[in-house]
Image 1 (cartoon, one colour):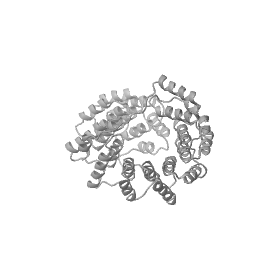
Image 2: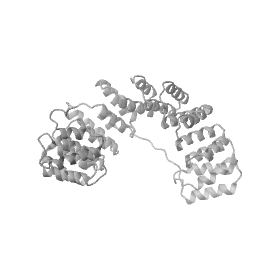
Image 3: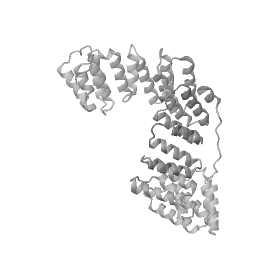
Image 4: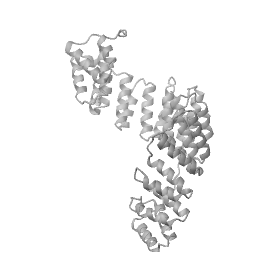
Length: 432
């Protein structure tokens, strides 16, 4: 295949290289054969070589290429300097900042690269300064800055910047990627349902296609806030569904007390020949636990290990132990704890202890209590100490009850306090 128009043979060869190392070797060979300045269209070769640098773990390559680009004056070509800036942005923050200050004529991509560089290094103030200094911003500029705020936890700033974009730049319309970023931000606020519904409504009004990624976020958002009909509405209208869509529905149903429906979804997923992953199994095991479906839960746990060859995590063990313990199968629950391939944590062990209290089985509880007390129990988790004290009292171990009470006083243990979120008017205004 001949090289595309306006692209040299060397650039085409570098672009078509099978690996980053081969691309850089080809560029090095090009320089060795002809050390003079490259021909007018050969800046493409430099751009493709610089793109390869991001995948090669060698701190000397980029400075050496930079020196050659200065020698040949190619560094003053905007596409080359921007590619060089991107290479530095993933390897040397200080060099990227210095190069950005030295580039005389910057384009939008140059600014966007530096904004992302600052954000990746946690400097949102400098990123916003560069953003504010731009004369012409594209959708990538706004997305980078909004995404930076969202990912670093400054969600209100992100929503307010989104509102600013909608007011000052009528020519720009949010795309699917930006809406996904906004929905991700909603998950960390107390206004998940309010803001998420507004974003979905905006997508419908603007005729934005609900693609795989946006559909996944919408299903996850609605499932998290308990709007299961809305989640199902989006799910049913997805042209194709992958394991993430099914898993979001299963987990949402399980977390909101619809265990049997979650199990039905899981079985339908298998009929659709979608292979479940470890998160899917966490969701369906949790559903069995909520619904008291012991046989089903045991069946799924064995299927995960034997049929799908997935190694159980602490979450899977926690679900199956909790399921057995809540339904009186304490011997089975204890057997799981003893056979776990990972060290049981305090959540797994207290699930077993809670079952022992419910079914008044001090014999098994006594085997576990010392292991729990040897763990680092948070000082605000007084419920664990209260549970152990109740179990000792149930077993008539009054000296141990007194010991636990003294331990509570010595460690200044407190009970967890409830917390609530307040709906924020800024969210309503920013995505309305």
